[in-house]
Image (tube, rainbow, N blue to C red; front, side, top):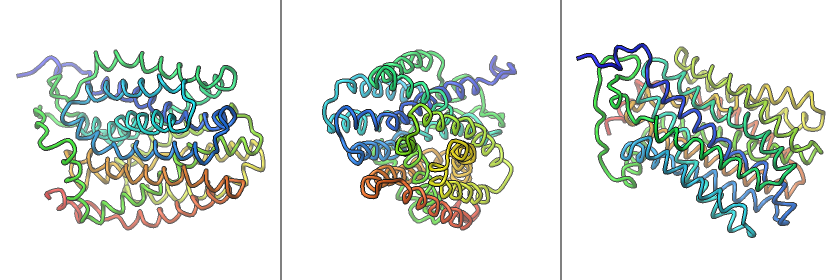
Length: 423
């Protein structure tokens, strides 16, 4: 029997992707805001950069650690309900932040509640939705959803930096809350959990299949999934390279670039503009990376992405001292490669472990990413306090990326590792 959805030329999955794109975009704006806060909190409360970096480090770690359990929640409660719950948690975290007076309060609201709320809508959400709705163009869709993080920086960071500079950081928080309140009814009304809900098959297939009910325990199932893949060398190579990815992106540049620019007497609005410029080019680079991962060997894509990122980070300390032209060159070059590693990593995960398990396993790989980011967020702040500059962390991250490029080539093709998916 042919349903109305089947006869229609328009595929509802694109509406779902649009909603998830907007949600991840706003979540990215929230996640990147602490980098704008660092100098304001130092000036208002006299807190050290190391202590503020410690809060951001915990937030980043929880953002990743919640990923596998978020995948389980998406499977058990549905995408829409999980997204709505995460937004309420973020609103709670943001709503109390303007009244903080101590670091432990910042840790509770931004480090713990904020980390859990944004973690529930991390890249795991994008990978899960892409796997459910798309077989054809899946790499491109994952690239597009990953790029939403860059677009979030593009839209929010310059605006939040300007509001913070002119009206104070508390008013910037109210702007973020307003964006979440606008997004909430959109998700509640138009979001759908699965193609079956609209009588459709995943794009690229013809069979309409009812989703299998979630089996297992919300806490134990992700842990059992981790135990089942721990014997796979492919899993550890993917997790290892992703650790270095997090170490060299949101943990280091996303957290400390604005503060590093401040050390070089570059205004906060200009520094936020540099991150926004990276966002523009990452939107292009990551979406294109998704297109490439549908057509080329993802291992070689990772080799080039990590290698070029490493060279750009080694160049960064020179660019900070040389002027705006060199910093713009860095922003363009690095921006094209910011999170271009996600689509090939997600595709290797899906090809190796199967579409049904990909979301939860990718969640554990994302934990490694955020562990690397957390290490860099705190480590770079500590070294800045100790050495007085960010030169050592930036150059060290560059060499770490060159190492990741070599490791990526050792990842086996899915034929050698697929047996683990049966565990």
